[in-house]
Length: 445
Image 1 (cartoon, rainbow, N blue to C red):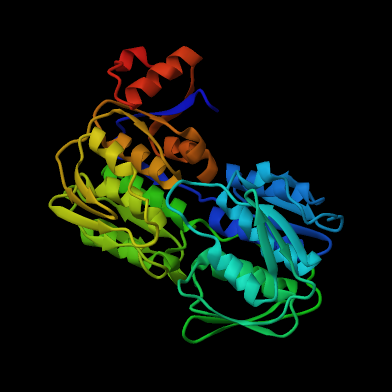
Image 2: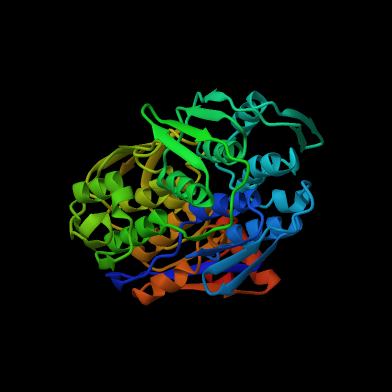
């Protein structure tokens, strides 16, 4: 993948009907939760993104069997799990690998895990996870970027979180599901993907109740059974496709879109002037783009606020809107690295810390750009569709981590996007152009 990049040509008026993949952010914790069971489970609607493949590799490293039995149905047999120690090379491939810590503590009373890797979009400290597990009776030591967690017997606890961390909420729920007594998570995250995990755990036999004031109550049981479960559709992929139509003046219908979980995002698109119809029971969306989009401002936040994972793609759309928009990122402290790349393409953006001011321009231009994280890669592709000329984007691994063949879906809508493989020298020339060394486009791949 090191010599591959994404090439995008201007593609106006993207239109058509598209199917969605399952949500990556729901799939990862749900796969991790299978550690709590002893037997064969089947998950359908599983996306084949790189992060999902890494989570499958992680479970295999623990002794499980994990294989796709058809295009999007994953079968996992956890009856042969025989270790609580994970290869650090696997852990460092993605941030979500920390989600196996809770299930391992519940099953073995032990977990040896390396500090996780993932997107460079801020510190995203795991101290919330560690503090929660400590309150449940876990002793944790760290040596050479490796965590050694020991709990002879996890105990139920009331965990009051200073911040509604999605990962911590998920990790604690999984550990508490097999911990005797009642564990309460106060100020818990209640994202749709968290609710999908709750549904899976309940299907396994867990006793979980959502109380007022964002409190999740888990009454532990001794055993959880294998499940068959369909992963929720990806609201973030739906948002990306809606923005692809919006930024190109197109028309798109997504019959599977979980519109009920996308209310503030849909509202912002409507405020821009785009016509959106929502299907019965909040499922399915039809967007018809306006020819004169208006600028809107937004602040990211925990659900039901504007999702941080759609901030970068939405910024791409604001670059061509009429007026001035202000975008404030409150979830991650380093999630504005795409600003520099959008400016290369002619966007008028000023940024200070996690606050940006975008003045709409009439036209973007193709450029050599670099994706710095999953959602930045999406933003740059969308900008490339609207820009005159050719956009070449390095950092393909980010795109592959987050999306399952999204480029093919975009192609089906009329998007001129492709993954290009080139020789070492040509790729180095492209990197030189990305880094501003003066290499011309004709010299790069």
